[in-house]
Amino acid sequence: MEKKNLLVIGESYNTFQKDPTDILANNFNNVSMFIKYNPVAEISRYISIPALKSFDLRSKIDLANKPPNLDVILAPVFYAPLDSHYKKIGEKLYRTVDKIIMKKNINFNLIHSHFTWPAGYVGMRLKERYNVPFIVTAHGYDIYRLPFKDKDWMEKIITVLNSADHIITVSNNNLKFIQKLKVNNHVTVLPNGFKSDLFYLQNSSKCRKILNLPIDKKIILSVGNLAEVKGYRYLIEAMQKISTYRKDVLCIIVGTGPLEQSLRKQINAANLQSHFVLMGRKPHNEIPLWINACDLFVLPSLNEGNPTVMFECLGCGTPFIGTKVGGIPEIIKSDDYGLLVDPKNSYDLAQKIEIGLNKNWDEGKIINHAEQYRWDRIASQIMKVYSDTI
Image (cartoon, rainbow, N blue to C red):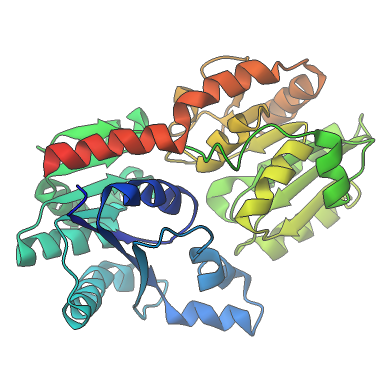
């Protein structure tokens, strides 16, 4: 592949789209990665609009340690957060990307789109225009929710999937949704992963000192967008139950999003100000400190594909409590690594948190389990798909 060029289309250049692409770049002459963004979201730089904070370029782009042969190219597309606008964004994004390709005279031998829509649509159209093989990765909502919203969406997603030369998806649960569609192409299940040079076991007390966190508290951590799908209202309800009989527990959420104000109101209404902190956004290279500083990591999601933060958590030897959704049960296959709870069940969540806080976890077992999900190992499997496709 040394003389070949890769074209990647994604939603962001960070975490689960950045990390494997950086590794894969070593196998190509050049990688061009197009990132869709809505210029309207940049308003959040000047006006505090929680709903837009997760979509501005500060959240989407992380240029740290970018390989010299990888070009990150912004593809601006204006649209309103409406279903009718989102259905039209595929063609708009394609025209933007194709215009840049022609202007920069970008050559490529393989296309990889992250998410079936709109990146998958763009990959399909570029395949038609340039006669280049096209791979699409179905990550989460784009396969378990989007195709089943209405007939129009289903036709769009089926067309993209059937146009691909190969489909990758991140969990067997996602695969079940693909199998419900009229898709004829081969599908490879490859989970997300973590960077082992960034997420590894560190001394908890030292991490707490760096972050100015209390040493005498049991700390529960979650990292994610403050959006409905992450289920944080149920974590607050669970903490309300726990706080009635434990005063030594502090719950921290790192992240921002549209529900920030409503979650703060819920925390205040439950009198949890001394037990619950919304920390806001933190740089990705700081997240390992937060994970190593906590006693338990909790992700109360209502839906997931296969959350990257779960693998990062396990890489640090930290026990993970998550809901029985998406690919989570496929990874947390033993109580040695974490505990599973029913989604939308704050009582079950409170019970499992209490069990987790009292359990003597074996960090070594957790880390050994995580080894198979290192990004370098996942990337080598993606590379095999690339080679077979080309």
